[in-house]
Length: 216
Image (tube, rainbow, N blue to C red):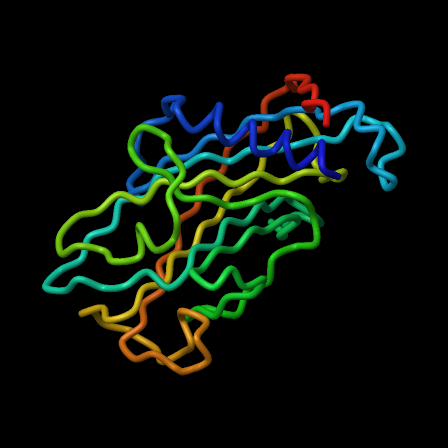
């Protein structure tokens, strides 16, 4: 598993500086997906030396904060594919300041799926940021950039269409349809919480790049 972890870190470092290939949509978001195969990873007892599929989602969100400087509580990035004609979650990464595997939003509580991968926030030149670096959102328009990796998804084919859904939850928002929930994971309910949902449907690349993990 250590070599797979190193491979995921290498992907974040490499793709963090790449430019987006899609223009912003009317939802105030842009996103793309890339595919890799990590292998062989002989030190992973669960994979027995086979190649591990890795899907990398990179996106940015445009948020507008009117008359407020809210605090970001969490971000959720979810991969969905059509199962029985309905888009169904098959992978999910969540992130808050506490590093919790579950976050609470005005929509629902979301748990991270049991798979290798990570969700990170980045700046405009692709450098990884901590949640603390980003959580204090300024008044006006702000851009959130993220990169999520999902390793070991076996029920998603190359060339298949996938829906990427992202939730952001902020505290101290001046808006309608607010809720009260433990949005930052500190154990206490927060007031004036707002969850925004962004989604786009795109096609998974038909060819995966082979990634050889660093030796340990």
